[in-house]
Image 1 (cartoon, rainbow, N blue to C red):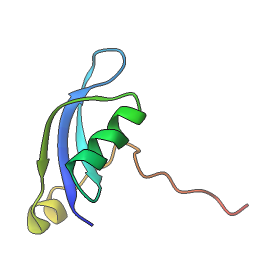
Image 2 (image 1 turned 90 degrees about the vertical axis):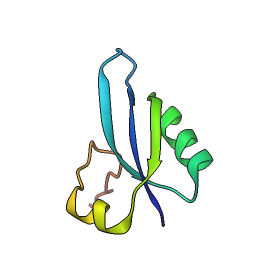
Image 3 (image 1 turned 45 degrees about the vertical axis):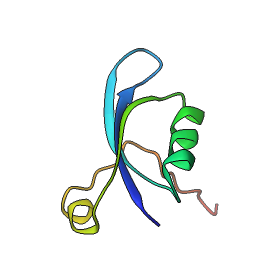
Image 4 (image 1 turned 45 degrees about the horizontal axis):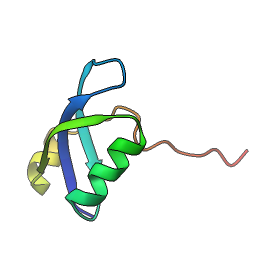
Length: 66
């Protein structure tokens, strides 16, 4: 699945950036907005750049099986 780098603002106006997966820009924008984020920049990441420059802000949370 393609990965997209983004920059934007959270609900408090704090600048944020990160990487998120999605099938296209429209889907990724919907995901970010659903999380209360307001993207100001969105770019598709190349595979090599994503692997070497990867970090998370908690967008992909795992569910415990307990």
